[in-house]
Length: 310
Picture 1 (cartoon, rainbow, N blue to C red):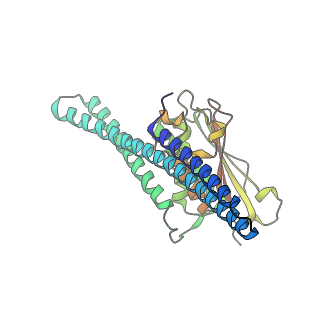
Picture 2 (cartoon, rainbow, N blue to C red; picture 1 turned 90 degrees about the horizontal axis):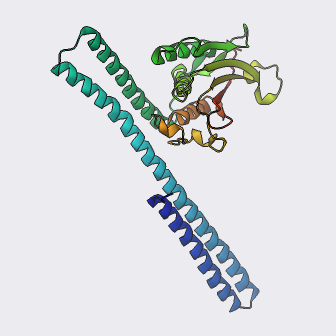
Picture 3 (tube, one colour; picture 1 turned 90 degrees about the vertical axis):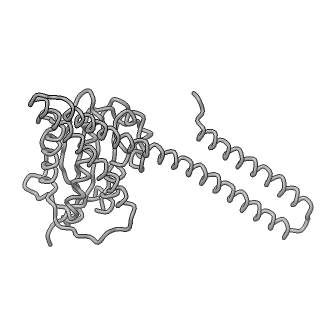
C-alpha cells in the first residue's frame, strides 16, 4: 500500500521525537556522570523527566493535529461533493427544460428530482450549521415537556415519506411502557434532529435490505430501582440490518468528521452522530452504538432521563 504524504509526516515526527529523546538521555547521563553531588544528581533527574515529558507531549500533539487535519480535509471533500452533486443535477434538468420540449409526465418527474435535490442540499447545510452550534457556548434553554413516543412516531412517518418506504421496511414504534407517559424535558426540534439523523442513517446504510425497528422502553437509572420517576431512563433503540460498524469503530463514529470504511462509500459528511451525541449530552442523555461487525447491522440506543410532573 502506498504511503501517503500525511503518513510520512506522522512517521517523520515520531522518528524526530524518538531521536530527541535519545539525545536528551545521552546528554543527561553524560552531565550526571560529571557531577558527584546528590543535588546535581537530583537536578539532572528532574530536568531529564521534564525534557522527556515535553518531547512526548509535543509528539502526541503533532500526531493528533495531523490526524485532525486529515479528518477536516475528508470533511471538506465530502461537503463539497454533497453540495456540487445536487447543484449539477438541478442545473442539468433546468437546462433540459429550457432547451428541449418535454412531455408533462417528464416535466413532473424533473420537478420531483429537483425537489429531492434541494432537500438534499438543505439537509447538508442544516447539518453543517447544527454542528457549528454544538461547538459554541450553550444557548439559553427554552425547554418544555416532550412526548417521546409521539415524537418517535412522527419522525418515522417523515422518514417513510422522505425515503418512500412502507410499514414493513420501517415499522411503527414498539413501546413497552403501556399507559405510562414517555415524557422528557428538552427541545423538541433538537431531539427531532437526533432521531431523524439516526433513521436516515439506518436507511442510507441498508443498501440491500431496509428492515428497521424502533423500540421505546424504560428502566431505572444506572440499573438501580427507585421510586422517583424523574430518575428513570427512557431508552430508544433503532436497529437495522445494514452494513454494520467494525467493533473497533463503535466509539470513534461519534467523533466529528469520522467515517468508517463502509460509510465512505455512501454520501455523507461524518457529522450526524457527532451532532446526535452533542444534543443528547446537553439533554443529560447519551447514545451507544452496538454492532457485531461488517454486514451485521447496527443498533443505536438512546438514553434520556424521564420527566414526570411534581
